[in-house]
Amino acid sequence: MPANAIIKTVSKDRRRATPQVSTHRLFSIIQPMSTRLIDLVEHLPQARILLVGDFMLDRYLFGSTERISPEAPIPVLRFRREEHRLGGAGFVLAGLATLGAKVSAVGVIGEDAAGRTVRDHVTSLGALADGLITIPGRPTVEKVRLLGSSEDRAHQQMLRLDIEESHPLDASAAQLIADRAKTLLNGCELLCLEDYDKGALPAGVCRELISAARSANIPVLIDPARLNDYGKYRGATAIKLNRPEAERSTGLPARTPEQCRAAAEKLLDTLDLQAVIITLNDGGSYLATRDGDRQRLTSRPREVADATGAGDMVLVTLCLAHAAGANWHDAVTLANVVAGLEVEKVGCVPITRSEIIHDLVAEHHEHAGKQRTLEALLPEISSLRASGKKIVFTNGCFDLIHLGHIKYFQWAKKRGDVLVVGVNTDSSIQRLKGMKRPIITEADRVAVLEELESIDYLVRFDDDTPMRLIESIKPDVLVKGADYSKEQVVGWDFVESCGGEVALAPLIDGKSTSAVIQRILDTHR
Image (cartoon, one colour):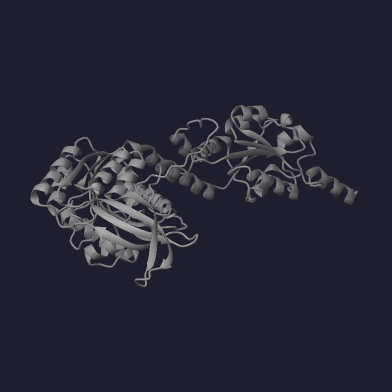
């Protein structure tokens, strides 16, 4: 599979430092599954992984295709630019490193420019490249892709050229791989074998490494090659494979949960495994364990941009979650989340810790609704801000919701990414406006507001002013109506001192709660 080891980072010009919130506190107030998943994410960076496999270089040649060759009925690609990315086991390494793992890489490269590029990329990701062994006379595996575009259309792959020798290493080179890996295994928490059948993992090397890891009580996770016989992986801890691989290696269909169960059980028994994970594309994953767990684990639907790399991110997540002490159910559940994030990206792009946390928070938000206590709101806001979201805050009584309110919220939401609305309780409104108000109780007012698309979070407050909310949330933008001057807005100086801004929303003539009440009184007087 093509693999991208260029880690895309998004830099946001944050005006102030984001306060650090304990992840444990963040998810101790969210549903139990999310609590467990975020605990896994919190521990992922601590893992030390030995990755042994087929490292490759993916070269992408981009160009424009605006004419047909006069020599043959083929498009002419006018070269524009070239990109080099890690492929094969390299993308797994990129995924592990992006999530904070300390990776040691073992594999073979050629005595060529491609090999030097692979080594440089591995080193740039903070991984240990001492285990990459140069084999004279054997080229580094390269996948050269030609991508063309016309006018403003996206680039499409036109041709792929493979440069490789996939025959097994000779005995001396294979032993060098095994010896180097066994040396680096000391101090590691997990061994990952990423096999593309390009020669780096012959049967003897696999058996020797699995035996050494088992003797040291180090778990072994396998991403197998497309082989008919998986005997060389016997004794590993777990294997992650896709549906076609499961069918090929077992000779059994794997279309339904019942069929997946039969195939997984055959692999468990014949390979002496603790767990089998069969990925099912948009169907999630099927999990079978030695302890008797048999179930298909699904995740929420995604907008698929590109499915490439999703399986590798499943392996990455399984490795790190298992190294962090997760059970297989939680590890696979988290892996499904990460795979879902991967398919939403174009190309192979490693998923970051903040993206995973943000997705878990967003999923919780979808199920839990918009109402929060201040205690529950703050960790979610911290996570959203850490992922680059701009937080907007406004507050009010919002009695008798009318068009003016709707336009006000829409205007406020456009000032940033997340709109938090503070809503006065009934008792605070009575102190502010007298005992005849509010007309609508706070439960009903909040319920109506929850249905407005422009609002992301609702939090009630009983204080006479929203100052405590503002100081806790520290909004990037504080919104109030233009009937106030900036200096009349509660909290304006605090927000600006934190680097935020105050925005005054335009008013709509005649659209106010007082005006509505007056018209009602005039009509029925």
